[in-house]
Image 1 (tube, rainbow, N blue to C red):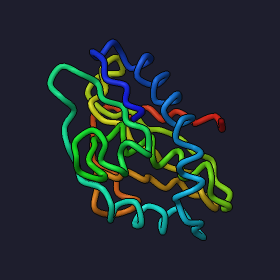
Image 2: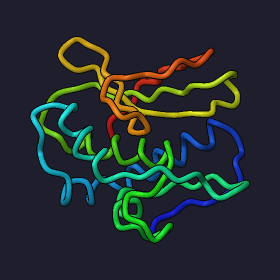
Image 3: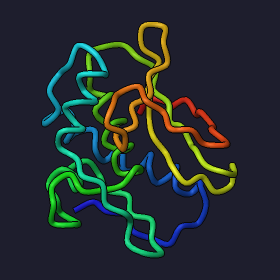
Image 4: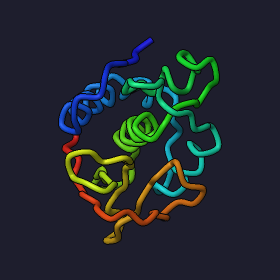
Length: 154
């Protein structure tokens, strides 16, 4: 089981650990994620398998794709929150054959303490949000501040 559970430090620490969990998820994604023609189909395939759960009180929980999908932490396959879903989406996009440029979006009321994270891609010249906490691919909720960070391939 690959779970990082620790007190929240800051967004830079969280992003560093998300990167680590994505790296740990690549092999599982390659072995378990089908190939899709586009990120929209990937979004809906993943969405059908996920259920939102808040992090344990006072802790930042960052699950690898395997831990998330096999239900190793909550005992429910697919149970996690926005950062767990982001880790899985980033890992799955890494192993797809379609060409895209990945990014993460930090959202909230301040740059120091965002309250939400999700991934997305630039695909065929358009920005496509892939926020698995939403019901629909491409939808973005309104936040006072958003910060887009391009993801460097692993």
